[in-house]
Amino acid sequence: MPSRGDIDPAEFTELLPNVILIDVKHDPLDFRYRLIGTVIDAHTNEPMTGRWLSSIPHQRDPSRIWSACKRVVDEQIAHSSDVPYVGPMNDFVVSEDILMPLSDDGETVDMIFVVVDYLREADLPQNPAENKS
Image (cartoon, rainbow, N blue to C red; front, top):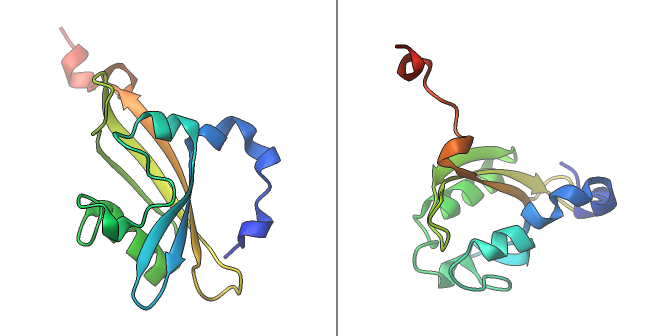
């Protein structure tokens, strides 16, 4: 697993607004939003930077985000998902993400690097059967 130091934000500046860094705390397990990109921040209903998932009712265990973070920590592999969009912008319908483990010692996940994208209905692939006349 790469460490946080292996990632150079200058190499992907166009993605930075869509990036989240999540700290991992062990014993007991918890996750804290260290950094939230501006695009993601605009899609949240309230500020999340610095908050622990356990303190957010819809994100604490056994929520989908908690389960995804736990899976990344337990399996030490990336996890991708798409979920129905919940946020302040009515024209978005799906959010897609990929969560990737980071480790300072190469053995224990201590941070999760996340990239999120938000899709409108028009962005989704169309069913070819619906286009036949």
